[in-house]
Amino acid sequence: MTWSPSSAAYSEPAWKILVIDDDPDLHPLTRLVLKELTFEGRSMSFIHGYSGADARRLMREHPDCAVILLDVVMESDREGLEVVRFIRDTLHNPWVRIILRTGQPGQAPEAEVIAAYDINDYKDKVNLSNQGLITAVTASLRTFKLLNTLEATRQGMNRIIKANRNLFEFHSLGQLAQTILVQFGMLLNPDPTARLPDAFAAAIKHGMIRIHAASGAYERLIGQAVDEVLSSSVVGLTWRALREQAHQFTEHEFIGYFQAGTGMENLIYLDVHRRLNEVDRDLIDLFSANIANAFEQLLLHREIVKTQKDVTFTLGEVIETRSGEAGQHVRRVAENSRLLAQLAGLSVEECELLRMASPMHDLGKIGIPDAILNKPGKLTDEEWAIMRSHTEIGEQVLRTSDQEIIRTGAIICAQHHERWDGKGYPKGLAGEAIHIFARITSLIDVFDALTHKRIYKPAWSIEQALELVRNERGTQFDPHLVDLFLANVNQFLEIQQAFD
Image (cartoon, rainbow, N blue to C red; front, side, top):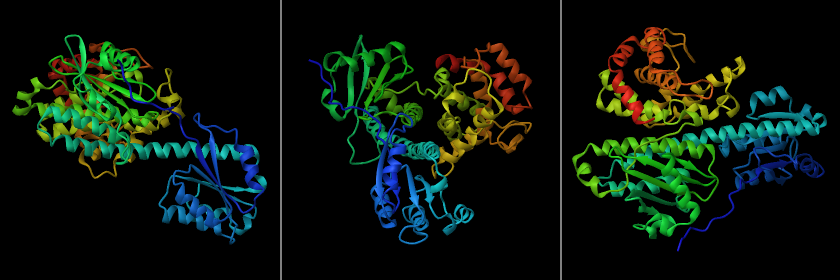
């Protein structure tokens, strides 16, 4: 008899639009203009208020509002401006997009308002056409989504670090496996009162996939075979991950495929009970990378080595980048960066820190539109400028953290496209002004990218890629690191082959 937890429809909620105006006739008109508007496949949900007091109350009740259409003149000539200050300074809400609308622009001159208040648009009601309102709201939603994506990523990064810190406290791989499932749940939903995802860890032995750790609704199935107790859809997804030896995502599920150094194959399955978005997927990948690194470090301890024969759960291969063709790129970058750091004489702690942080080198690409990121042809000057901004976006997301790994990731994000000769971006740093971690990641990243197919180019041969590295010695790359790389290239190629 097969079994699966109950599930519900996974649909995205509507965007909340707060309309605040003391003119009751303007509310139905606003709804009429915007009622058919959709953005990113989501419709609009309208909340109405008629005074500054209403605005304050409603913003407390609905902090997730995306856009507020706010009248300036209500109880007083500048009531709307006071509401703006309340939202930004009292509620500390920098995300909601505020569009001021006024029928009396002389009461609050535009130049003064823009300079003194944190608003996002200022419109005269008389001149605001239907299309103008649609355009303003759409632009605001686009910015709101980007800001929330970046904030969710920043918070997720901090949760990843906290989760990894906890993992190092364990001396049993069995406990580690169980804890990883719980940490995945906390990563995707930090609310301690929220329902944990239905999750299990499984391994294949003698042609059978058997559950050996679980959380949520699957907990009672520990020790049983997947084929015998789970629904056909979950069984099919599990075998597909095993057959393709790759992570799999559905609308609301993730199943990770991991192969240990001994060849043992392991799987992690999560059902998060909601739609997985791009941030969720990127965090899952990054968490998997860091979990694998923590796991490998634990394997160095004799006690772990002795007990690993009794444990069927291991973590190994990780991370797919947002660009589908990049495959195990970040994993190879992490491992080869660690190797080059060792050859360069960095301490064990620094090598491990670089291995943990280097997978985040292209984190800023989360803010780059898919149309540019996955464009097969040559980018225009404007598109290239947007693409280059991923270095600064990644740094901005990570730099405020008080965690060492995250701060290191910020440095690598910001500097991995700088060049030894000072002709790189974004700041034109040169020589040893570029952090050693970024210099290492830059060389490894370029070599790996050249030798693997990308959407905009075929894979280069090893010989072609090595020739470019030689030619860029002292120009793009640190000459000492190039010498170390070329002298030990077979070790780097072995790592590449292991994670291809």
